[in-house]
Length: 254
Image (cartoon, rainbow, N blue to C red; front, side, top):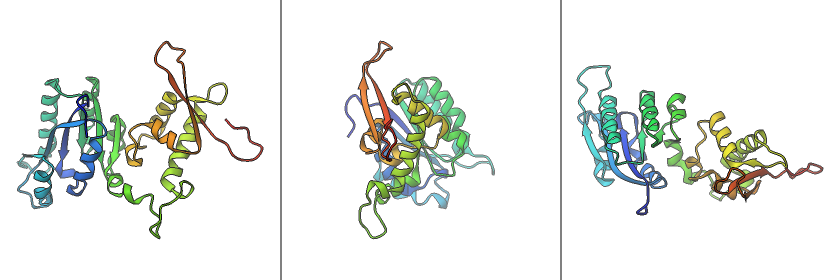
């Protein structure tokens, strides 16, 4: 549950490009980042293809915004959602936006919101164009939300160990590469630099899809990395450093 100091978020859903089945998981994910003070879904609700949302909207307190498709081939839903987002942005009531769509048309909107120093969390399918994914502070793939609880279960129904969890193994491999690319003297890398390298080289890497809100939490849970806090040489708060544990014989731990 969000606290009194939680970030105030606006959740805007492009119902034309989002599945109603992800709504519950999506809103639970939003709670990791703050509290949803506005929840709106946009679409032409006379369209039978949006029928699946009819029960989902009231059950999750999502306000439906009607937008008729006046002209064939023109996405009126996108326009309405963008106009609303700008109105909410200029109201100065929010700390961030959650934009739910797999449509790259929202990329300029993300850039505009971030120019105002607000966070943008994107939610969409794996088919989402890379431009939209990269523009967001973080992008969460909705297929991962639906299947996250199944990912650590083996085919025989038993929980998988770390060494047999392909998601964890993939995460560790990417982290190791980023850590070794940003190494400092002594084999340690600043976590902030690891994060920057990781997000630049792999913009589709999603912490949320792996069940984490912060990179430091993911690293802490991995037996393959060490992490320590050190006084900052830059006169700020302490910094976190990370290194990969090498376990092969004759290899120096770095």
